[in-house]
Image (tube, rainbow, N blue to C red; front, side, top):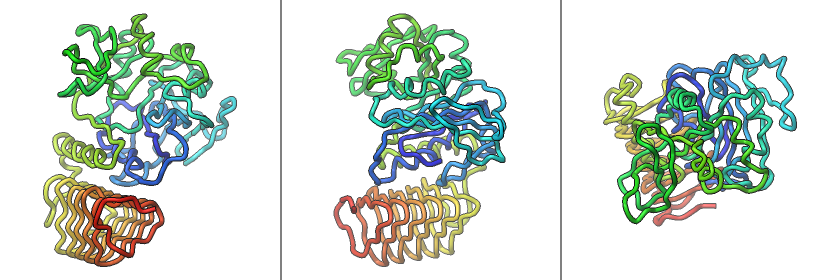
Length: 396
């Protein structure tokens, strides 16, 4: 499933710190989004061993259930915590006005779509998907779709059950809280007292990280109209003592812009180095943290890294230099090209002796001819580039 503005939330017992990056690859896609975000719901199942392929599209996983629908540009919902096994595809229950769509039926996946036909803000889409989210009475996750972290779903679900309130949100510490809206909470219990927008004096250095878990009761607060969950729903919940904060451990980054996507990728690779160094690529010509799908092919005399992810089926020909880049599934980088701080989309072809830098982003199926220079170019999908782009601009 590839949906702009939508992440897969995992209801598993562990956290794959790379999953969010690969799911959020669409954040770097320069193609404009016509529809806002999505609610995805996925029920209790472990992610595939090792997580999905780096730089690739999100694969199907065993025992997953997803509910997909509009939830504003930043929101992507997720699954009921602690669900049992999903319904077999042959016995999928009806989902009201949200008919199920089955994908990978051999793995027992149900996807239900809630279509947001007009923008409903960051809370309204939850009301739109009310019958999906409340059908079994279990808590459900809701995510902002443009963040990357280690996604502590199991810990968040346990925290939520322990305090018994209506909602829990994850907070992260920042160095300059005056730039953000901050969360003020009780240090012992995590109960949120209030929210302060861009405080002039220090009251807290914790901000909303965009990961939530809610009990179905929250749906009674939300009307089917454009509604901000941050400005309209959360303050009322905090006033009633029904909202709690759990502090995030490890890295966090908003990756809604291509330059931030690359920063988030670097953070993820560093976390992988600390936790699962065996997953990183090593060998001649590899510098620093590099993640390469086993199906990718890298030619002779290449220098790859630091901070590079190379997806499934990618071909890197001889003599290529790549650093601080994401190269997505099926792309080909031809010989003697030089790439720094770039995002190369699915099935792209970069010619010989090409130089690309300064957060150049290629949408899906872009062809860059030989011996060109691209400086900060943002190229929409299915384009062919036949001349250099010396200054940053969007190629439509």
